[in-house]
Image (tube, rainbow, N blue to C red; front, side, top):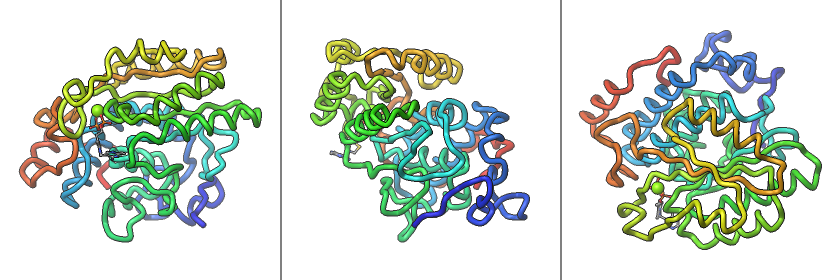
Length: 312
Ligand SMILES: Cc1ncc(C[n+]2csc(CCOP(=O)(O)OP(=O)(O)O)c2C)c(N)n1
Ligand SMILES: [Mg+2]
């Protein structure tokens, strides 16, 4: 069993400032989210990412930094979440991370939005930590709904969960995130076909369209273009978004929400810059999965100034 977060019992499991321990959102959890400055929180999440990966000298900073604005907006503003966490997720929006290698950003956003103590980020990739390199459900980390890391599976799960919500008359949405290189896995296209066929119109799947993957640019490894036309041909509603412009993220996500319930699943092609926010990591696959040195960390942290939320 893993701990449940609720207004009543949160203090038992999640240390907080009011208890003299360290955590940002233990008390009043979700209500406090309204006061979050999303851009400042995104900077804090980026600081977490580079510090986590540096500390253990392994992990994936590139895609994590690129998807930071999206995941910050999703968890702090867009999703309708219950204060607790349970695997059934009835009566709330759900999120499935399919490109599991970007776990640093996922863990940081989960911790900072109240799922587990922010201090636990220091255990990233340690032996016996709940924060393994790729998220796994058997670690029982609140907020993690699927194991991911073996690419290509998340859209199938998200489609099934969204279909279950429709069958159960649960009027909530399912969000998912996928890499552009990840779309080269054939299972995605089966799920894309399935979701359209079953008119799964409570699903908003976002593609991290950063043009990079582990071995080089997506165009040289296996070109996915024209991506928009492909999703449209499979009968999806397609939108485009600048995933590193917080205002545009909020605007397009609102549009996507408004487009649900109209008979088609929704795909957002989200343009991002791999390594966004740390100039020497930006726009190259080289930073897909390597850790910064001591000197590079120092430089990265000067590019990502301290925030009022504080380092873990
Ligand atoms: C099934 C499977 N095949 C290969 C890999 C190895 N792998 C890890 S990340 C990655 C690249 C994925 O590219 P993309 O989805 O664009 O992620 P980004 O590099 O942009 O973060 C690959 C091939 C894997 N994790 N799973
Ligand atoms: Mg990519």
